[in-house]
Length: 493
Image (cartoon, rainbow, N blue to C red; front, top):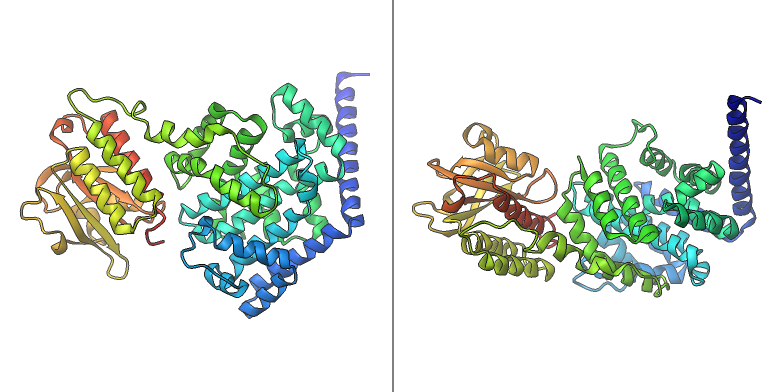
């Protein structure tokens, strides 16, 4: 028999195995009375969310049919994950706080995950699978919040849960098969999904589509899933869904690095190679990863899986990768200790969720007292008037009065192209003029989610750096400050 015949037979065999596995998975789902019931609850929740005539009471009533679900919803919405300042006591209040679509998406994820809790208590591979799903879902939700698509965060949470559902159900119904793939993955140092594909010819997408088809999950998530796995993007998806897909792919890879490999360097390598054209920066993702262990722990306790945990290296990831002075390029003749202290104060203000103005004021202090910028000024965007308005300043402002500054955004590109570029792109820019029009090398540091900057800080470049404004030290320090401002949760969103 020829080599081509052998290959054709292998392909046919794998195809048959694939069909057999998906058929068995569908059959198991059909025979399982509990999981299809849960899927129907998901469908009802999603139908309510998309119906413009739905009332708060209707959503609350469906959620309260499962007392455990209502309790978990209140726990989460009152948690730090949703930055709740005033405690909520009813499901109706929770719906009103985060919206019908958001609450329905969150509940859908909880309803599906509850089925797996007993199996996860046995540990081993299934517990890791649950951990990956939680990491991916939490990360997708949080990272979407840091972009212009924050309204998609709960939909992102649910989409990520669905993207893990195929593997979860395969491990749940056919543990020996999944365990064999997991053991093989360890030996070959690959992901379990890759191992399943090589072993059985079945992909994660094949599994997920089989599940979605059996459980009548909304078609929106099927389209998202196909695009996230590298398939063709459905043109009916709104623009924000493209960002969701990008973040979903990033978060899925992060979960594999953390749970399958538990490898810090691989995690940073994946992040560096994936961030590309995404609407958020690497420092923002690293900061989230440093917060993840606490959020993950609280989430796991809430769904009765307190024994799940993440690698210890995450606790120091942000300080070592983003804030460490060892990572900041040195600058001969400049004492960086004052800058380091001021930057720590800014980080503390952000971590304590200080007021937006207090955080921005601390950023001005980092620039003027830490970097020794002669002067710095804060301007915020007035969307209605289409202007940038001066707010506060620090340093030797001379005749410049912050409160008198008003820059028209329509003509900004002609007068101050660097400021216009910073505002429109959300990136730090060098400007040859100060805000009063006189020649003075300055840098423009926008803040706010992605390309929709809420305002900017303009600071004159310190004398020591004017011969090399593109130097590594100045670039790194301004990016550190910007990353902290962009991660500030107290600002207007």
